[in-house]
Length: 123
Image 1 (cartoon, helix red, strand yellow):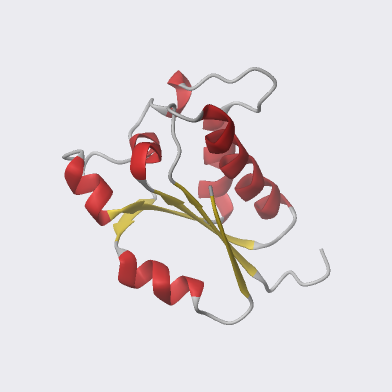
Image 2 (cartoon, rainbow, N blue to C red):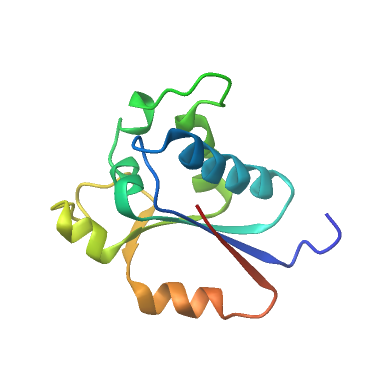
């Protein structure tokens, strides 16, 4: 990767309701981590459920890397954020989420997205 200082934000609105889009978001984020980019994965909409322990293990898509492995890779070297409003709508609290996942809102997303050398993708 020629510019490892670049940051990639991947926002996924898709969960089990749109498995191919969901898997693509996690795959792109994990691949960017492996390439040395700074990665911030945002879980919104139906993807919010993957902030809970065990939920990624329930996801299955043929010919896709296991979602728990992708999530672990992103958590190990990047950040994972659950949308504040999405969490509230699902009654998910900070005590419920996987260790290392934060809950934050639009202001934090906008701050990240508008920072220098940042690319944002939405799935």
